[in-house]
Length: 442
Image (cartoon, rainbow, N blue to C red; front, top):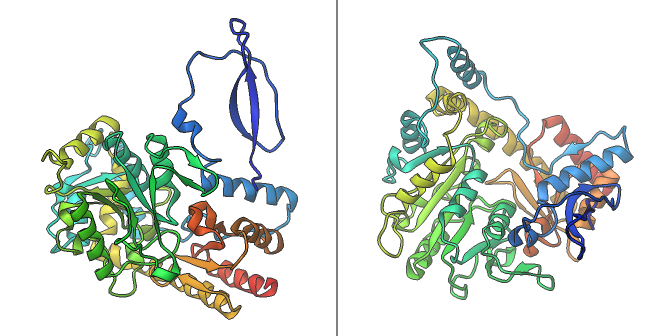
């Protein structure tokens, strides 16, 4: 069930008389046949192995189709996790001041260090990794966690095996496919042959049974989890670190939603003893500081983390960064530093609390309708169960009848079937209106 139809452009070079080559473009107008020049460059078999479009652009396309069908609909977007509240003035003022300084001889700066300004790297280490042994030179500032996931895929060898939570953020799987490590897609299971899927469902408290899990070189693990909203406990992460140590694996730990944790769940993998020897952590300013458009994140690679031959991983990651990246924007880094000041952090925490209250309203709404609801306490995402129903069907019905955009759970992997993800990123009046519409529908 996809609104995105693939439009075939048939290339018939004059020098080739065999089967026409086909390239694909996104279209809603059906198949379109064209004749034109083709190069002799074959398309990457890894790109051909990707299934459909990337999830979030497809959601945007469905939004677009819906608004074309109902031009007067007042759409409420609770799907793609895009922040909505203004960035506090203390932070934007710092960025504006830095930007204006670039127009002066004294304030102009060109390229900075690829790894990020050391002042910001140290501030990140002190704010988020205090007493965990993380130093500023182990922090690599970037343009966001999703970009860093792809850089880490570039870092890893072509033959490494990969494990992901199921369900999980689709970038972990798609970047693994693009890197050529996934194997063929199996229609009957909805899984790639060479990826280890770690079942994370309510029945196991959204944490995999590691006693039966297959070994993998790289384990992508997100907590608080996107999409389920569940935060792993201290004991669960201790099991994960022990599993990685026993199997000689590296954990890629995504802590992008750590600021939303409301209980004693760990905010970093490095709260677990021994994690420095087995884990890389990626994180972001996007969801806690409203930097979805500003773009700023970081990756921590501890000095102790080594390959099988004893070579430090940090040295290779530094080479990847220096080769593929010219450093995060100076202006964005100025904003990041302002976020981590005492006053800046206090005001952005109030924005996080605003989204957490939104999440509580959504949770209460679905629970009042008798539905099983997960998440929303330690993350800005609510995971709602619709037993026996296709998640795309639920998505379509909610969009069609309430003008509310959610995300179908199957977009996060086969383990997401029968669920939808509902985001808390919206203005309060939109959240309250969505609550009324949902109660009317159900």
